[in-house]
Amino acid sequence: MSWLDWLRKQVTANDLERETPRPAAATASSATEDDPSDLPAPDDSNVPSELAGLDFYSAIAAHQRWKNRLKDVVRGQSQEALDPAVVGRCDACALGQWLAAQQSDLRISPELMTRLNEEHAQFHKLAAEVIRLSDQGLHQQALDALRTDAPYNRCSHRVTKLLSQIYFELSEFHKPDLRP
Image (cartoon, rainbow, N blue to C red):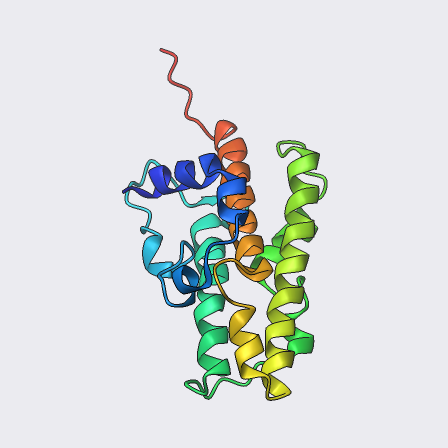
């Protein structure tokens, strides 16, 4: 699947399907839709991953990698020290900084920008909560918060979907003029 097809799939994904809780046995160890290996690299120089100052591929991949980083920390499989106060800041990552700079970009639907800002802030808040649970020794609760049917995962999918939608909105303004 190409990068562009993957983005289209994110835009057309049924939110209700993603938010419907699955049986615990089906979600505990299954591969999830936010597995970074699912995201194909941009494969066509005519389909840029960077538009309006944001590398959409890198922003999506970075947010998808968070789940694995959090799992590794909770399981004690990483020496990475994550501070919930830092992780909880949605303005500390490249996407958050881009969002702050794009508030007046008329090429992007204000509704989409508002939704992405809200979901992105919630994503960081939920990631910080996983770290807090782990820091308190509540490792199983922290892992449960990362399950496929948990709010963190659903929020992560909404961030990806909104980024994909904004990518397509912006790409409309970057199409080459094919007139003779």
